[in-house]
Image 1 (spheres, rainbow, N blue to C red):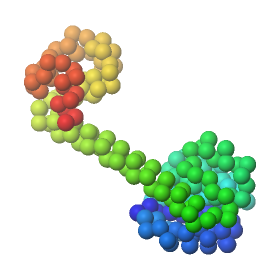
Image 2 (image 1 turned 120 degrees about the vertical axis):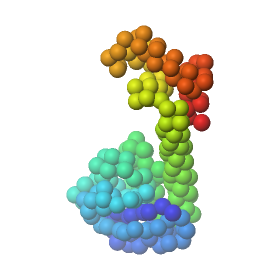
Image 3 (image 1 turned 180 degrees about the vertical axis):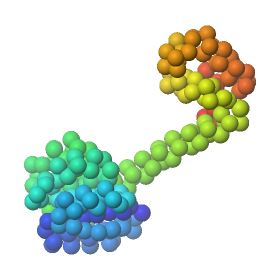
Image 4 (image 1 turned 60 degrees about the vertical axis):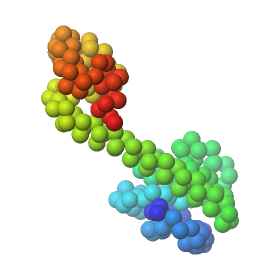
Length: 199
């Protein structure tokens, strides 16, 4: 379920988009507003996944609105003005719908948003899984805090010399810690080490 908001200064346009949202089971309309400034407050204070945004509004343009929320939510622009489409895509909007928005065209944009947000969620979930595995495995192999710091820097691709410079320790000390890490985890090289700790 994607939490949505409609921000448009024209109530008839809001009504059409709200009606389309009601027909799509994975969209949930949290609220609507005719004021873009209020819209920024709502987006920054609530968990909004998707914004249906009119680009031509009083007080603040849709482009400035997108810049203000700084990627917190995904945006589908809705406008009667075709000439703003390029600006919107440069700011990484999902789609650009021309008013009046038909249901089939709206559905296509909603499906695109749903797919993109699912992919991002899965990627985030996978990254969290790697972090959880890494933490659990470091504890299992009884790595010290210094050894964990060294492993994290190995993950970033730093050489022993660079690790020493980063942690303000001698390169031979890094080599000694690395040998201890290999022994504790029963591996022979850095590639095996990272595979083992992230699995």
